[in-house]
Length: 207
Image (cartoon, rainbow, N blue to C red; front, side, top):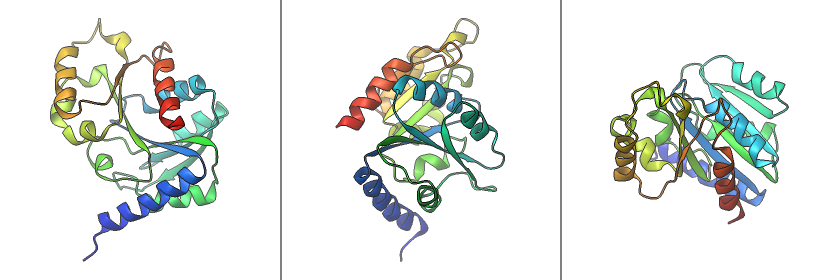
C-alpha cells in the first residue's frame, strides 16, 4: 500500500526534474528556531549576485517573509497551521503560483531538526544551519539532519569567546555522520563567511 511519505517522495522527484528543466537550483534550508536561517539567507543571496526566490515555511506568521520583501528579495509565505515540516504538495503549489526560472530557490523549512530532515521536497540539496548558542551536541542528538545535509553552516561564531562551544566535539559528531558535507563557519551579524558558501552553491549549480 502506498504511504503518505512514498507519495511525497514521488512528487518530490517530479518537482526536482521540473525545477532542473527550468534551470532552478533548489536548496532546502533546515535549522532549529533561532539558528539564524533567515539572516543567513539574506546575506547569502547578496553574496550570490544571482536571481533568487525564497519560500518561507512557518507554523504561523509572515514576519520573515516581510523582512525579505522589504529587502527586495522575492519571497512567498507558507503557513502550515501546526504541521512540523513542509511537504512536496505545498512546494508544488507555491511554484505553480510563483513561476521560477534561471534562479536559486531557497526553501526555509519549519524550524526544527527532526521532521524536515525526513522529507524530500524537490530540492537539489539540504543546507543545515546550526548556531554556536545551540551547543556542540546537536549532531549527537539529531543525527538524521546531519546525515542528510549537503552543506552545514555554523552560524554566530562571533559568540565563541562568550559561549562554551567545543568545536572539535561538534566536528567529530558531524564527521561520524557525514564525511562529505563542508562546514562553513559564519557570522550573519557581522557578514562573515558568506562568500565561501556562495562559491560552493554556484559550483554545485553549474554542475
